[in-house]
Length: 158
Image 1: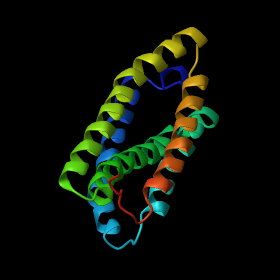
Image 2: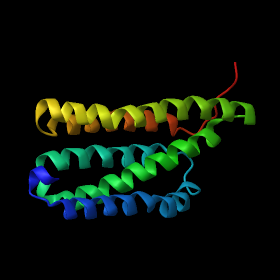
Image 3: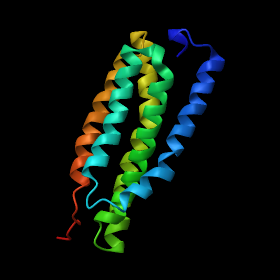
Image 4: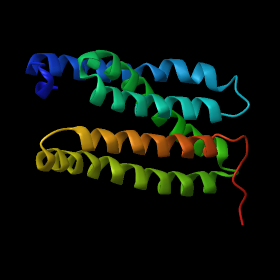
């Protein structure tokens, strides 16, 4: 944000807004989920919110507050959905544990490697365009995966 004219204080405040926006889906999404037969629509929508906001940071950085709120809500909701899908799609407790272990291992690996990698790309390129494009593309992939995972079905053991 500093590269677009925001002070350190403003960037810190924006981070606080991001944290609040990430928490809001914890209140809103569970109220919606129990009313849905499947979760394809909401999974695709909240993941695309992340893609749109990443593109927004790139193309309209002056609207960073809006993109921050949209990204925070979308990323908070995708986390809730990802964890909820484990219980909704597993047909047994054993299967839920295996699915949870696999999903969280991959998720936390990406979460640990992503920020340093994006920082290194920023340092090499000198701006945030490539990291923002990568985030937008990853969010589009996440939307596709969410639509597939949101179907009303359980995983059947083989």
